[in-house]
Length: 153
Image 1 (cartoon, rainbow, N blue to C red):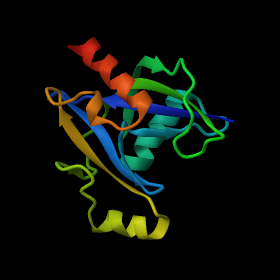
Image 2 (spheres, rainbow, N blue to C red):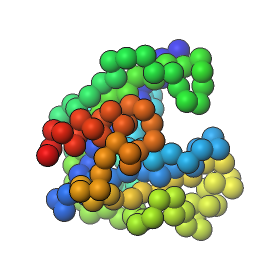
Image 3 (cartoon, helix red, strand yellow):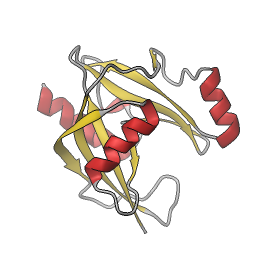
């Protein structure tokens, strides 16, 4: 089965890149915001929905940056192949979701979500000078982080 994932690279005017720190299925993962494509949904619509669901943030989806061009097995389901699509994203309003300074700095509300679902997430901005493929966990995200760093440097 192919699992289509759509992610946004949101860089603020102060040259900080938004990442999502998540505890999911027993693992700590830092990734770009986004998620799974739902049936009947376009990739840009998916990404707009994911930002709204995860952060309450309206975004404009910009240019396409990358689509996976190699086989990547899912880290969570060995019977699934991952196809990831990445776009630039621009916030259309101020970010009101809590933004953390330290990785995996989950607050009380996020811990309540964890106790209810076994998963939780928070968001963090990484300064452009510190941003690199080492800042993210997933293999495809590492490739995209390198591409973005090369593209925008």
